[in-house]
Amino acid sequence: MEVPVYIVTGFLESGKTKFMTEMITDDGFSEGERTLLLVCEEGEEEYDEAVLKRCNTVLVNLETVEDMAGDALVKLDQQYRPERVLIEYNSTWLLQTLYQAKKPKNWELAQIITLIDATTFELYLKNMRKFMADGIQEGDLILFNRCTAETPKSKWRRAALAMNNTARIIFENTDGTMEDGVSDEDLPYDVKADPIEIGDEEFGTFYLDAMEHPDRYDGKRIHARGRAFRMQQMPKRCFVFGRHAMTCCVDDIGGIGYLCRYNQKMPGANDWIWLTAKVEASYSPLHGRDAIILLEEKIEPAQPPKEELVYFNN
Image (cartoon, rainbow, N blue to C red; front, side):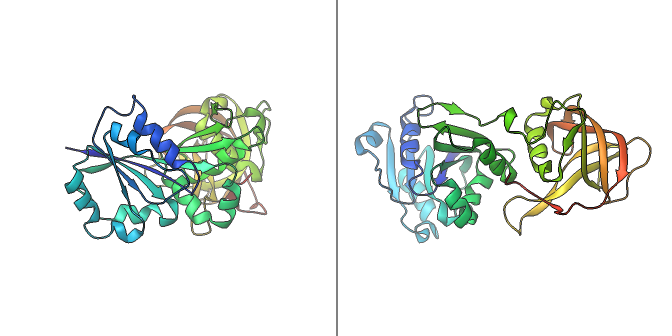
């Protein structure tokens, strides 16, 4: 029998225990399954033993990384025979440590949920970026909690999407309301202009926003500076118009961009160009999902911008 594994990660006091309790007691999530709850750090909030018992859940504390070493997880599976496993994970251990731990063959990762305390996010991102980025990069759901009207949701959303553009991102406000943080007014360029002028420092924002909201750009025209990349197995008469970007740290630099269908002549490989193009919201074989395709109207040679790398911090 396959045993689904749910991981909830985040820094201390990010609300993991409360969130896990809500999962366990949620009738839509729990139907009395034998649940093994592995807790990797001790916070101020504790689990209610009566609630755990009522929900057919047994709690095991893993106080150090060594508690997962060897056959430890296999033995826990043999001892409790869980029908599902929930892990309240210590983000400073890094998820790769858990991935590499020996586990029963029938344990299957179902979801990773990353919790972020909005009141400490920028502090941790600045001073403990490696650990903060780990949960964001791996998360299926990223939940910013304790948000207020002053929380820069669009900015943080872009930062998270730069590290993981497939994650679902939710902001939970202190009044209990939820939102996705998307705001047209926060875009640094005029989406009603013809063409939309994408500044060099705005390319990352354009890339992320068009990926998430291709319909916003469908039928419009853009003008931007980027590079012409050649890739294998491209559709005929296409290149990738994009830039190199730093998504997390200096060691994490990769290409971002969109397919561009050219008219007459393909630019030289890696050439810097000014591109004027019409945008078509469509399935993108480059991304394997709905995105945008650029239809070239004009290509002109360009000099590299002052800063060639794209940074997702605007």
